[in-house]
Image 1 (tube, rainbow, N blue to C red):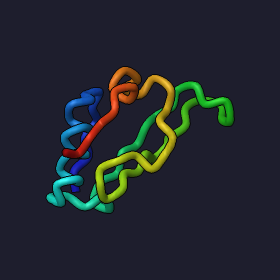
Image 2: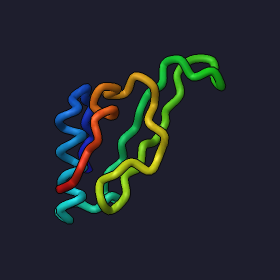
Image 3: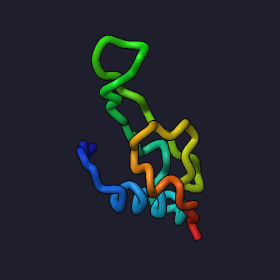
Image 4: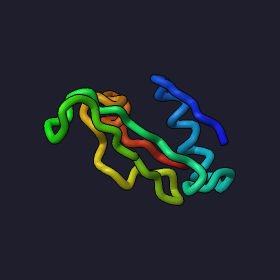
Length: 77
């Protein structure tokens, strides 16, 4: 098990690529986003961002999480 804290979009995109290539299973990856301004809680909230077998996001993209990169369509090809 590895725990990595990053602000690197490149690292997250590389994980997506490895999943799409079949080198990594999405069930082996857990991406957690700490939302410092969640209106449902006093303080921060932790949100899991899941990936499917193609490396695509299953969950809604949090505001401010690699915002520019999400606007650019990601392809596993």
